[in-house]
Length: 115
Image (cartoon, rainbow, N blue to C red; front, side, top):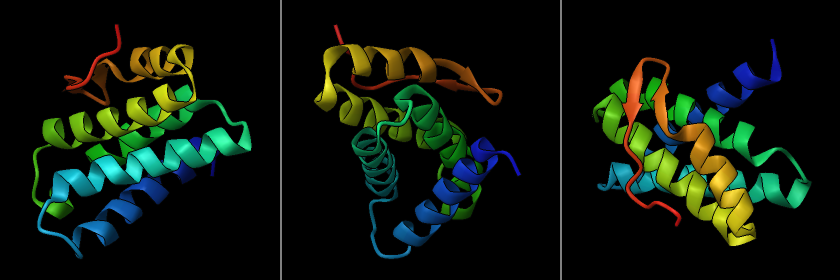
């Protein structure tokens, strides 16, 4: 299984698990994406790839956690961008570019944009 597929599955599973312990599912999704990108930054991974995987995983998890795919994607994108921006503005912009637009057929509207 390619690493991208493993990443998407991990994010999906992490979101489903996190959603069971909170009433704010979208905040759980944001947190999972934020933590994943922050971990990837510490390991020197490509944050744009990881951010995109976080959004794809959130889209796959949406039905299991009773939120729309658009809301799940936006929450994950926000968390991914925020974590990348904490590394550098350039990293934040790269992740923002990777997760903005249409991902897996879902229009992603980012709630916190970098300038």
